[in-house]
Image (tube, rainbow over all chains, first blue to last red; front, top):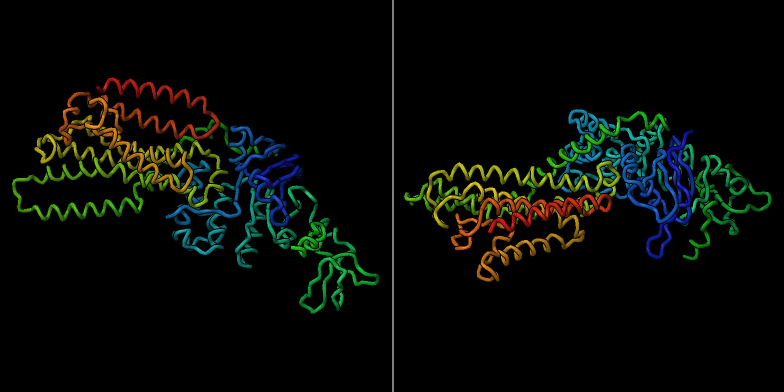
Length: 286
Length: 283
């Protein structure tokens, strides 16, 4: 797996908030999941990697290029696709016009080829039937897919996706998984999400960010392994557990230090993530 | 990773693509500026009122319809087109900021300066083209007619060029406002500056010296303003002066980006010097 991007000791502050506090990790080819609680600094990190924002200190390199140098930044952008967390759409644009507009900004100057590419990405996100409709008249999920289509233009070598599955229905989420897994073949995809199922299904690598620092980097199975011996099922609620919920079968799934003789179960990626981030006390106090 | 980089075309080809992208973006933005709903609504209303007015005067056989059309187009462009295109150009130039679409657009290879250049090209290719067509129409209509207003003489070529430049200038001023004043009130603020600044500067009676109105970003045309001051200077140099002001507005837009500012400062200094020379030669 070759390295597509490296982030080294990156810090970024907004007023009194330290959004990133020395984050360091590498992104290789394939799909990398970025997990973290709200306010962990995920969006800031993604904006920096997408060359939209600059860090206060630290080093970022994408394809060996330094985004702080204007000429190298342009080179990075020519190989980049970026879907922001909250994409906006200019008034009056239809889906086709919006994506065509972004394609021009991506220097796709051959009109015929550009239109063919625009139609391809619209079909990829299953919006062909509404390509002539105003973007702002579409549902939230459709708008998100339009923005996703724009980020897929030109088959970018590095795709940065900030919560792409928010607002998508289950069928579209599965379709999205197919899209992203295809995009990750031989290329790099960084996927920020709160959906641990998406990470488990798609990602070869996971980075967990909390309070601006990298808590974990490894495979999804190694993140799940964080929960080894700390997840158990019981018929009654055990108050000493850090987190308890009732499952569909009517039993109680517990995370934390198990009592003697507890019925241990295989931890999922979500269990590992919850135990790693472990903010249960703070959440209870809040 | 090297394979990833080598799979793309050369940088020289990309640089050419950037300029072509700016032109294509300009064409797209120009179309948006011209087809702005605000513009279509107001111009549609004006056309309707013009039609009603013409119908009301149909019994006045002494008034040739060619002169009537000339007057109508001239006054629409002299009094309203600049202001209306200011509004439509500002709405287009600020739309990415207002709709929070900047995040995705900012990650594209065409830099912020490239997008601003596209907007300026759009002003020329959109409102500028409309003004050019209108001025050609005026030149054709103005052949051998007597007007009702002003000094009864149709404008010269230099005066019509001035009129087109006021429209382009208003559009570039709008892009400049939208680029530098990135807050919700920037449209009305720029509008007030444009209207009152022009009125104050072109008011010969209030001016400290009677040549002052020549420095207003407006036409100095005896075709409709029969003031004495309009007869004193050179219409052609005033057109050059207005072109200089347009160039300065474009430079101001380009100076918004920090990178490469030295180069654009030097270019701006050259354009400023040329504008000052044209301003001095016009009177």
